[in-house]
Length: 478
Image (cartoon, rainbow, N blue to C red):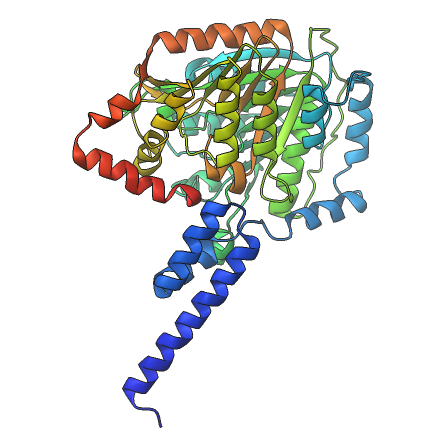
């Protein structure tokens, strides 16, 4: 029989060996060098604490997702062929050189650039939800809704009641939410929807089934599709704060886009994949509607991303955009914790003489991420990258503008989570009218912002500066 001292000694050795084994796994599987180093140090030095964290947060891939969706396509459970056939006449055919920005981005997406899309910029919550609710009221056949956060507050209840009403009219309604983002969504909210024949599902992680291994992966997309011809994508979630009614944040600066045309069907294809993963079922509705031909200028690409492919699609897409910039590269994000590759692309653009600007919030909603963003100021200033802090409320929009060439409205934050762990989506368009609208919108945002420098950081008090440097240590896993 082992005495207690021997038992605890063997336990410590066993835990340390498990920590070393997990560190070896991190070397082989963690995506970034910084993340690998951070995990290895923690697993070897503090295995008792780091091991359970690594089991939940150390995974870089969303297990079985890609295989499940591919199998569904092979068995025609998602009816993707019909959707692809409906879109094919609108696919942009280019005879240009293969290194054009459109060619590179389309290779990163499962979809192609399409023509004949109508793009409408929706600025802030009142305009966005007014447009979404109007489209829901006009739906004739089906409604797909996918949000990261849905709250049981006044806005959420308004959406719920409208969906119940439309379901009573015979419209098929499907609601998908992320269970982590919508953790406060009440059971009564879902019960009312389900009683009204609105189909609901959570993307995951399935907390009620205790599958904690998927806890670190979130469906951060915000998609609404109406009858296959109209779609909405952008930064807004369903909550009163997105209407600027939060006492803590006040005005909430966010951006959505409404699109009509073949790109809406690509948004629908993204939704259908997520829905199938969550339910293993395909919506029982007619999935094809005649596509309107709006004959607007430019092309549109839907770019879904997530932790299911070998390459870092977000990193490659943003690097492609930055590397093609000749005059300006303006990016807005509520968070700025870039990987080294993205940081170097920003520096290289500025070195070429491009007007590189980052627009970030002055108010924090996640303190550690907010503090970590300040740690990059000196490096950015050295290479003439300008950093602005939005002071007229909380800035939550995710927008990128390259020259007068292309603009994107996305759900993608400039941080490790969005780039590597979250399921995200972006709409990128080259139409001059839309690009000009985005440029005008951002110019107004910069007028409400303050240019900050490394001196602003150096002149802050000691606790703040210490907090920034400590937060930077966590940047690989933020």
